[in-house]
Image 1 (tube, one colour):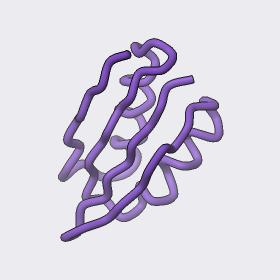
Image 2 (cartoon, rainbow, N blue to C red; image 1 turned 135 degrees about the vertical axis):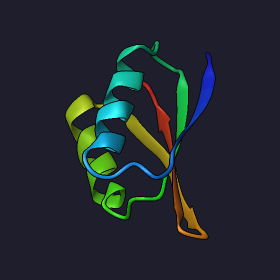
Image 3 (cartoon, helix red, strand yellow; image 1 turned 45 degrees about the horizontal axis):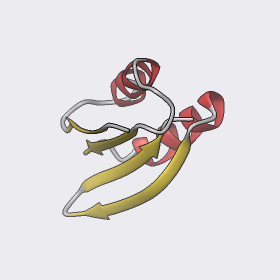
Image 4 (cartoon, rainbow, N blue to C red; image 1 turned 180 degrees about the vertical axis):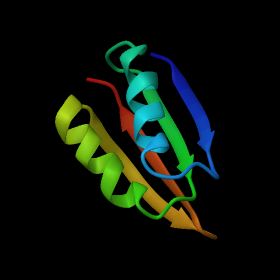
Length: 74
């Protein structure tokens, strides 16, 4: 199981969701991906993306304008 953290800060919709989808496509089941975003729309886009891919949102947090999503690849 691998864990990866990627900063997508400064990217605007739809780039964070597209980059997340591409990252998840290259991961193995059980791998964990943490992404950091500053676009407020990712609060909607990332959960919608995960509903499409079937991957799991393990945790979501926000601090100082940064949204952090912890995703587990299915």
